[in-house]
Image (tube, rainbow, N blue to C red; front, side, top):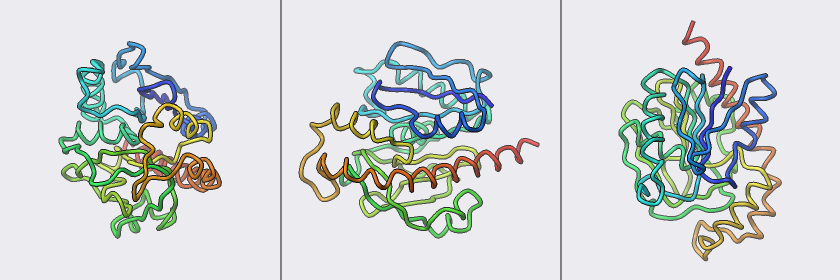
Length: 236
């Protein structure tokens, strides 16, 4: 399988998703949008993974490549590819599916619990993961649910944390792929966002939360395994 991922800034990488893909023997290739690379033709990959970044999906003036990226994501969905969106990537995918992306009532930065919805507990994608788990967050915006999407998870600060569309498009507002180095990179490059607020932890608290990483990887691996199984059975 060929996995293509879109990178928006050097300090936000594929993280654990790359390890998962390589352990499966999949080919992993990156499009560095911030460096001027353009999304490839849809036939060049089987899965598209759209990662995070500190910009907003509507920052077209500062990041002219966003328009090209949005067209690339929409083409991938239209052509029936498996698409995974993480944080900013989830917002971009939601936008491509016609949903509104807008500021959330509260910023959510740090380690906070995520709870599955009632629909998720019976869904083939999520019925084997814990009903409550702790994930890393770094977002101020959120997405509305696209039409026909299944709402899978929420948190206290943000109602829409995860959804699946057509059993092949999976979006996570939170970060299960994050590594200790990735958290340090976010803190270093986005430190101006770390201010006192209800759902905003200090840099020290975020770094001390690294004990949650392995639990997040187990959830992520299960989600990706299930997504692969479901989409392979659909394509037969």
